[in-house]
Image 1: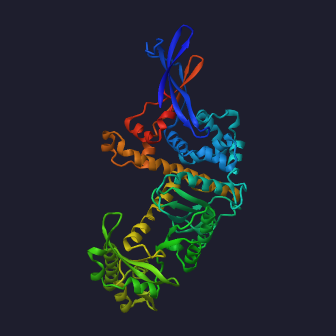
Image 2 (image 1 turned 90 degrees about the horizontal axis):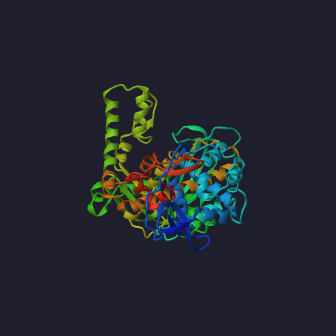
Image 3 (image 1 turned 180 degrees about the vertical axis):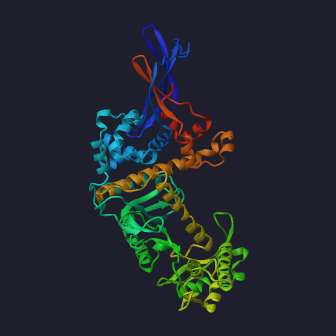
Length: 540
């Protein structure tokens, strides 16, 4: 809340604007000066607007994005949590926060970051002494995220992640379901314990470092981020992740994972921890195929089994209880996507036509065999190198466009299973954000402790991103109607672009330096308003 106050100076009076705010650390209300409004009489009536003399532009700094995510950090109380979780002094806590902001906003190298910070308004916002913001101070701040801290935590960064999870969960109605996936990032360097030859994002083999990420179901806030050995198979890291989530104290959760992580062994690990698992059956085995082909199309494609895909198109999903993965009772659901079935049928028919009508090249033959699959295109001597198994071809027709979902929670119906699993696609968007706007890779840290610390920086950066995105979505309906007509939906990526022109400008005025922020447009104000970010920008 803002208010004005008359300040006497000699025989003159000046009107100033102040703000009252709640200090969570002191647990009381405090006041701070905002701006000088001009000379006034003793009753506070403004006599004239203040005039400013500007001699030259001292410096400029892009501040729109920085202000947005700094305000998100204030809204969550991130600095206070860092101080408490890491037993860190205020300066070190501020620099840890600065590392996360740098990951989102600018991605400056660590050796150069102290110079950039000294030119930014972050010093003033945090009340930092410029002399204490050095390269060595940033190195120390980074390493506070790794040092052993408490029983049950290998490093302080994991303890901080656990504390921040409590912060974003307060007042949240997030269901007890999380999504887990892994991304592999290129590594350029030598002798990194986490770097090894593995499959990168393009499917090729290269030197990579893995990162495992767990996010919440609805708002996709991070729950856990940790580095993994690049050569480690996706199925191998599930046990370590479950163990860490149990260490955080989470009980009775549902874990949704990609089909590449589904195995009978991992299912035992997940359920043994008291968690439920939902996923899609990988590969093709006799048991799963009997479930996939249980009903003919006319019995499955009925209105009572229809579910809506994210695109708005229809699919069909029907569930029942059956044995699977060594368990006698599992909720399974066969899903049929009519459009996918049509596409698969067309691709198969075109491949067969090419075989019958001409003499395809060796490359085209490889493509045809891939379309038909190993069971249909059996290895055989001859020019083609395979023959078509007509019986298997007819059998494949029964399963076109179909796949099988499973859930250890028997109470979930088919529609719930379908909706919960395909919300998993959002984690792919999370990784796109992390590899794009958050610049996750390429990785250049060589020491294992630094990569462990860096994973917490990534966690914190994405938490600020997802928190700002959540507040923007919640606040956008109250944006001016003209802004909403032009931008009916506002994504965080679009908001970042629109804030690019907001700058913090320092002017020389005689012997003093005055600070202003460039005038905000209506849409920029609407973006910054939900988190109160405009209030931290200097005004004339």
